[in-house]
Length: 327
Image (cartoon, rainbow, N blue to C red):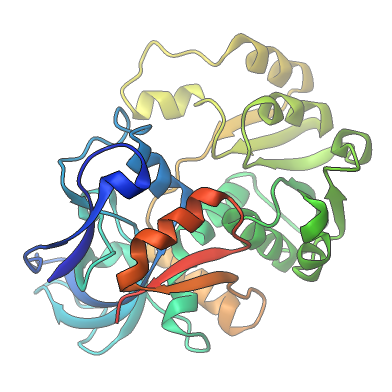
């Protein structure tokens, strides 16, 4: 079967190739999914460039991407929650990575039936971004009337997080560029801040939760706008000490600046490392079917143009998700 694989680290045009690989073998707890669509994400670009080798070592060549939607065509002896013919979606675990191909075997713990009111292409764009947003905001204990700042509202994670926070009854501030202000407002954000003409730090005060999707100086700045006793959750900032231990970094300490800022506001800082979770995807399925959340697709590429899809991802100009239609 055909697959789009990373054959070496480096620039996109030099690093990717279509190859023939063996159809995966289904283990006892797996379902075999005939892939209808896959989504690509910023993490995939980081993998191609070689920036994540220490955290995510993988043999080369390796099939790329984590997000998938498709049809169950085979199942293991313990895969009791699914039947042949079920329409499903998933964010596959690291050890089963590789959805830019015709079939993928996935542990049932990571799989959910897909929302019934959207296409395979729309469903493929939900898992990684949706799980990242849901797990981050739920860790922070989001509740009705919370004031939440979500950075980069036009991105895949940000656009989902706005909708999820609104579904929970929160008041949402978000940042975006001038061109995207109207579009992001339509997602439901209460106060859209144009970072090209406004300083969010003068607008957001005493936020219950800051969701940092940008890192760099934004992580430290989160403590300027979070309330005393609030929470800062980040998917791109430095690791917190508990997360570092999870990666075997037992001597790790939080950078001194962040530790001081966190202590000064009595505010918790947490790095969120998203984990695949079929039960969480089922929650997202319900929200989509109840029209609380709509998938945001930027562009759908045919499988034959998968490398062009990565060029588009690298441009950083996508509004919503980039999808590859497999068949």
